Length: 114
Length: 114
DNA sequence: TCATGACATCGACGATAGTCGATATTGACA
DNA sequence: TGTCAATATCGACTATCGTCGATGTCATGA
Figure (spheres, rainbow over the protein chains, first blue to last red):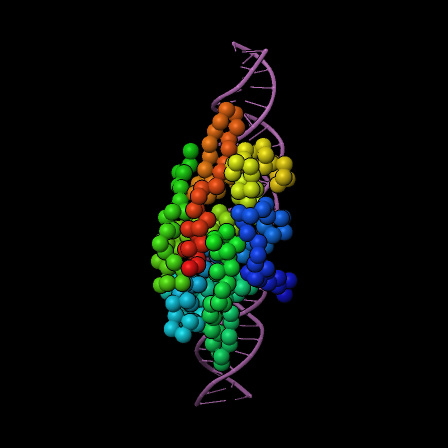
């Protein structure tokens, strides 16, 4: 296991791009968070989870629509989870992913939105 | 010159992550925009430009603070400019970069912020 | 207990991105 | 015209990322 560092999106709470110059550390954290969103597949997965009935979806529901292999989808969901955008709940054999409330809003605010 | 494609941030206006599932094209565009922000150096450059007197800064002002070579800084500024976050104005030998008003806000809204 | 199905992890590969030094370009000025 | 300074572009190298097939893990159910 290689150092799971959950640079949670909550870490970038309070920092704002347009206020004063970002410190090296704050920039690193925010960039790490943004990197999780800087992939078309992950953006689609995120929106598909958000649009799912009950606000959650399992891997098997997402694999076919995005047209990628199961390991790849599982990898992307892990990235989104470690970045603090998704939560994972295991019920039986299935793993259900759901949006973490407020996670995207925190990024919005970090970008300097009013 | 290799295909300058200015996937301007204005392109992702109107699309929202949390509404309905993102189309493949919309996800690609938004990811391209986010990718420009998913680098610590570029985030620092963006915030430094925003915090500069007069709202603009030249390359020579930014090179030393970020601790990277001039070509590298120039490269990052180009990425930010092509993504629609910065504007470039050349006066004499100097190139002044400034924030494009509303560019960051559009990304905020695309993320689903109210 | 064994087989099956859902998901995670591993190892590898090609593609892309960040960085640099060297060089080209352009404007200012003597 | 020639030199100098600020910036952009080029080519190369390294690191990281997205993707896959193969395999491991674990819960279900016959």
